Image (tube, rainbow, N blue to C red; front, side, top):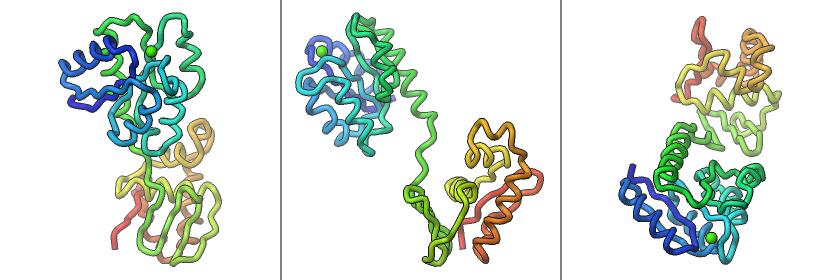
Length: 231
Ligand code: CA
């Protein structure tokens, strides 16, 4: 509750109706009537959700959606598109612009609030994106550059070793099961075919390459591994 919601809607009475009902439910709505201000306002206010009308003056809803998803500051904000009947809502979602849901006008307040609640709940359950740069002792991992440095010097790792190290470092001190590591480094489908022992083999070579820092990868017997970042 109390989440900030940005409403981008040029039809003033619809916008006010949405605002009134969101407030009544305890949300904090703010209104924008023009597409060209929507992306800027979202970047500034960082709302928990954007309700985005499709047909807007300035920039249309699709373009606003594209911009929100392209900007790292706003890309994780969920979007519900408001579409008029006959605007082929399925196509709107199918465009792969990253909208989370849509509501077709005319909609009931109850329906809109149910969608808002569902999307907010889903987005709260989504794990936060892993940080791009991770550091522990002499190990520095840059996820964006796919690069690991040991004592400042580049370290050659296979892609699996890199993904394993990233998964372990990103998890803090939490123990990761072998199955989890398989999913993260080999992908969901491969996890069914690759034996969990494979993880042990790769962790072994990763440890050797990390030298003294390899001791940070701690074996948790009959379970998996965890990464010791401290010291
Ligand atoms: Ca409109």
